Length: 451
Image (cartoon, rainbow, N blue to C red; front, side, top):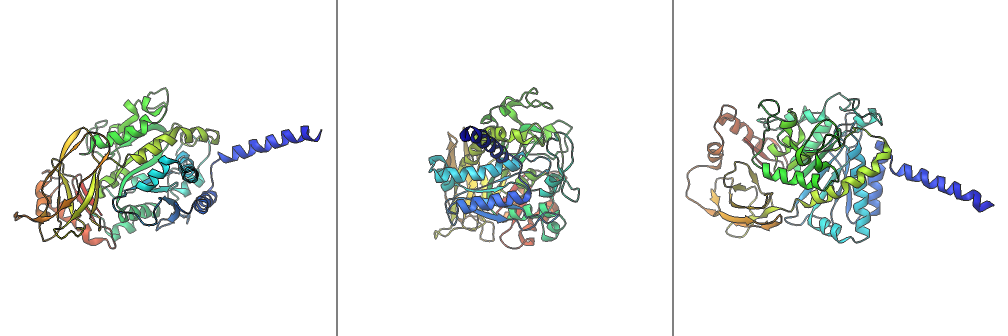
């Protein structure tokens, strides 16, 4: 008789625990969850806080995941950022769940995950806007309650815009959440990034900002690369790639992707900032039709986005990467990497490393140039990319016989228009000297360098 009574009690307890497993975490619970994952898997997880807390003082905590105590040469950095709009918290739970899943898979010695953590340094920030989340309501699919931070600022309209140089004074006037992100983004050589939202089911890629007519796409020079990484996510999702209005009312998106400006244009977005001011390519993933769905749906969202997330992280390993050295074999820091036919440039790290995401199916001419008074450069290298894997391409810089400085050539190579003037080039180049520490950046039309 006792056993008959105990069974339903234990069953009900199991149900209650299961429901709790897929509930939304408060900020305090989120922090504790990250710390518990770190404690469980200290070999691969290290918690971190951004330099700024939220407007109401909540820590912006994330997790770094890698097999290495220190990043080896040419291991790229990837970042995933959730809950930028406080009332769109599905990503908050999906990314937090991913941290714990990666821990479990590591302990199970999953070959795919071990390879990923060996070849990639991954950063996950589950919530950029904990203050907005605290004001939001579960089950609210359409309102804007909790979208902004505590000062009622939309964080995805708060990032520096095109043609602005960045100084420490500029950063000081940003919202604290944005300030923390900007400093973080500019302090590390991130290569690939995704920023997660809710209210649709689509991957949105740059540019968001546009002066073109409403509904016209405004694309980057790396449009093929952006389409490729966007499709990596959408086609690994069970429904996103179908792009039907019946799946998620409000838009029909071919292959589940869209150019930002073609959908709707706005200024001050984070993905444009990444592309314009750094060498990092970021997309925005809208991962749920309802902005703040009931917690009962979280398990399904986690399942639907697991493979897209893993495949997207792995997509950082395409194109070319390598080290730039001088003729004595020493790494040449902050040298320029140029792809013929594209104005977008990037700079190497202080260790001479670079990563250039390029889509397969074409041949590219690439070279390295010094960015100093020595006026060094490499020969052009022809690289045929026949599959989406990364090719190692190292460069040696030597003296060449051109009279133009890199500053002069940067201006001469940019498109001529009133919008992009010599004054603009000079202003943005000032960022090289205006920001302390390891942060430096160059803005040239749609050409960016960060190291």
